[in-house]
Image (tube, rainbow, N blue to C red; front, top):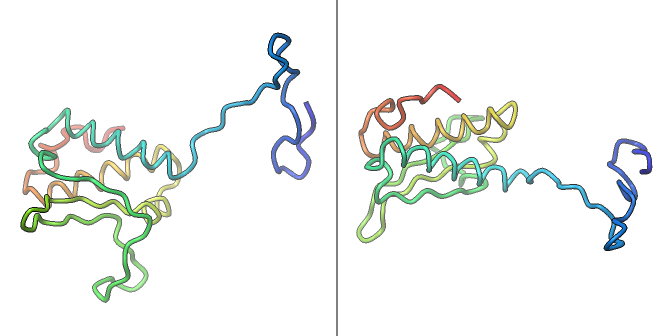
Length: 141
């Protein structure tokens, strides 16, 4: 193992090569920010589907990196999510904005809670189902 100079990560092999394959060991890396966010959204959707399936029936959930700039924003505040009513043949949608949510979260577990809370609030606004009916354990991890 080589030392980590200037805190830029290890430079070189972490362990001796495998004696059978002669390949160096490659450590697993944690998922990147976008992959972690997508996992948090998928987990939140599963959690809502398990507790109140009618709240998410016929609703598409999507992720966008940043929202479009509009005049309706208050100065300095970007929306965290948006609920879009169904129009014609298009189903209802909930859009979660990744970068504003990441910016407001302190840690990854906090981001999971924030994503779930934003999804539940938007589903409640879209379907008029109360928050605690959609997820009775809303403020619990």
